Length: 148
Figure 1: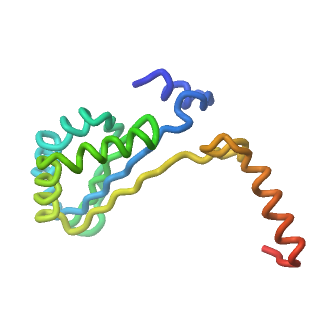
Figure 2: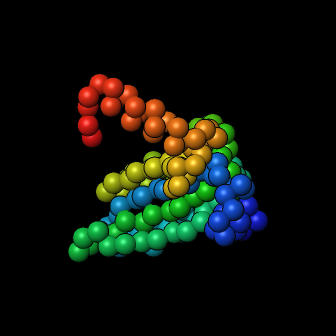
């Protein structure tokens, strides 16, 4: 694990502030989970790592009596790295083949791309103060007589 990521867990946000997280969710019949994970490990994971994606964690959870959601948490250093990885993947026939095979097995799938927001509202991802934006927005509401 990188020092930047370790530092972020200790409260130092300087190294991981722009890190992008990606959550892939694939819902499968329970008996399809092991074959899909083998396929993912052999055919997708090596290329994803080559594109700079770090598989942080993989979970599975039952979503019904015979269905399971597999969730993969990926991280990339920033949004530029995400879009670079996406551009490379778009031109890789192996990636398209992997997702075509996944779609044949999966009941559903989804990808969420997440970028951080400062919990304390001190700085947003652009380095601007969220507190200033909030006070401006509140002032606008008050001048128009609106209330939240």
